[in-house]
Each structure stands twice: as C-alpha cells, then as structure tokens.
Image (cartoon, rainbow, N blue to C red; front, side, top):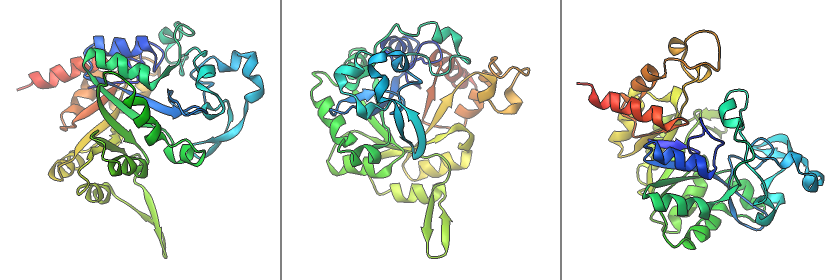
Length: 308
C-alpha cells in the first residue's frame, strides 16, 4: 500500500509532512510526481502548471510569467515549471489543491516548501521504504530539451543513500528509454482508458489484453497501473498469468470517489462506506494500491487478510 503523494488526504500533497505522515501511518512507500524546472531539476509537483498546488499566483515577482500553455495537450493558463529555475521554485510554498473537499489539509497552506526529487529520495531512504516516481508528460518535456528519464537518473545518482525505486508513466516510450539505459528500477506502465491506435480504416481500440501482450517480453516492466473502476478479476488474472502485477489508484473515502452503492447520504464530500468498497477492491488480488489516507487503507488491508 502506497501513500498517494504522501498522506494527501490530511496534508498538502508532495510535502515533507505529508510524505512523513504516510510512512508513519504504515504505508509501504510513497508515490510522487516529477516535472522539470528550466534548469533541469526534477521538481516534485503533481503537474507542470503550479497555481493549484503552490502560492505562485500570490507572488508579484512572478506575475509576468503567467501565460497560456498546454497541459496534457489541453490549453491552460497559469505558471509552468519549465519557465522557472529551481532556485525560484524553491521559494514557493505548497497548498491544498482541493480546498473545498479537504479544508483540514488547506489549513496547512503555506507551511511547507516545494521539494526536488533528491529531497524526497533522502527522506524515503532514511525510512527504508519504497519510492514510486511518476514521470509527468515526459515527451513534452523532452521537446523542450528537458529529458525527464535522464534528469531523474542524474538526480538520484547524486543521492548518497537512495531508496528502493519504481518508475511509472503514462508514456511507454519514456519507460522504454529507461529500460534501454539498463536501469535496475522496475517500471510500471500507467493505463487510463483503453488506448487508441489508428490504421488505414480509422481508429482501432486497444484492449488491456493487447497492452499486457506487449509488455510481457519486456523484463524491466513490473506491471500496469489502472484506475480503480477498471479493475476486474479477469484483468488481474490475465496480468498475473503474463507475469505482470496490477497496481491501481486511488483509494479515497469521500462519497464523490466511491461507487454509488457505497455512498452514504447526498453530501459529495462526506465519508462513505470506504471500508466495504476498498475491501472488495483488495479482494481482486491487486498487487499495489495508492491511497490518499494511508491509515484507512492499512485498516482495510488488515481486514482482508483477517478474513477466512
């Protein structure tokens, strides 16, 4: 069980306190997202646009760098990590991305600094835990001359005591790049909806079975990671038969994130029957899950293990 950006159900994500809390609550490791600064530093932020998770919009010295750009291929307006050197980003303070949903976390806005990957690696290594690194939009960054796989390799090579590492991405090419470099880190391919390819007859839908077949001969790949609604007994069985693991994301206890049958009341931000929902998911045999509230996920896992 992995703390999703730390214990981000309680504290602003990807901060030292959130990561430390996740490990203290019993998480086996933590997952962080990495983007690149202008000077090639792997920065620990959920996405390249920074206004939702930092105080950058309130910083007058950076006002002139607000611009329109692309975020996962979609036009967006804001402040983008690749427009700033690390020395500038290091002055920013983290904030809760979903304050209406998590006011308890938002109460800690401004308390913690933005981190670089080396900071997190040192923290996780000290705890003897696992660090999962997600490469965010690596192809886009590479086009800017900021190759994330290479930057991550360089950053972690400079950490005196590196933790156990797993790298994941929605872009298989970035993971293949790491595999070609001979890294020993296990790789996990993130899958959202079924991917679409094209041939002379138009779009062709790829199934998870297709993706599993492609990954099976690639020994560097540990497995695939899929969103919770797409986890099925059949997918887990097929992946295991191919020698691959199935990871899934993200365990969240609020009604808005639970299947309808597990919701309690009409308030979207109220807590639903997370224990039953998560127990059912874990019973499929998935190999790893990401959780915003690691303490609750540990309790659900213990309940599954105790069942006859």
